[in-house]
Image (cartoon, rainbow, N blue to C red):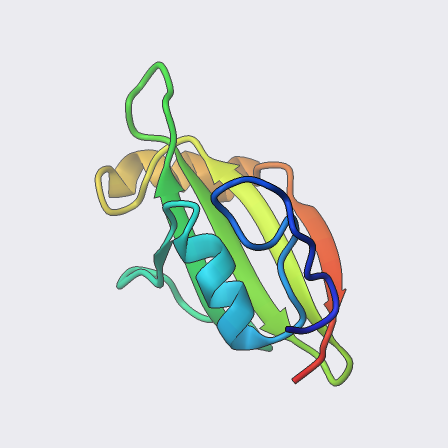
Length: 111
C-alpha cells in the first residue's frame, strides 16, 4: 500500500485516498462513486473524475470529484452540483454560471 493507508475498522480499507491512481479509483468506488461521465470535458491535467448522486430537495444533486495529476501530486477537486447534467442539462447551466464552492486537496503521489 502507499502513503495514507490506515486501518479504519470500517468496511473501507483507507480513511483517505492513497497516493496511487488505482488506490484512488478503489477508494471512491467502494464509497459508491461512479467513474467518469459522458458530458464532462477534461480540464488541463485532469485524468479522471467521479460522481455520486446525493439526497437533495430537487432530487438531482450530485457530488462531483475531479482528479488532476501534477508531477508530485494528485489534486482532488470536489464540489456539489445542484443539478446533475445527465438528468437536467439546462439546470446544470446554473451550476456553471454560479460556480459551486470547490474544495481542493493534494495527495502526494506514490506511484
